[in-house]
Length: 85
Image (tube, rainbow, N blue to C red; front, side):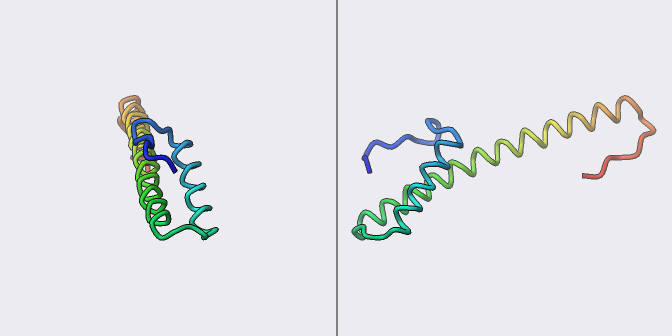
């Protein structure tokens, strides 16, 4: 592993996920020193956090889109029943 690793703003979701998969593969394969295993674990935690940030952002965008769509539907027909989510 290199000392210079991309941060959260430098990785796409797919890049972080793919690197996380590789980190897990290396940890599961074993054969590393304790120090290397700890470094891999820490990087895996960082990558999992990056993936979660991307997923949280995607969820917020979807929720906003659904809310906007629901608001538009309500504005179009004020007598319409509320849409269950």
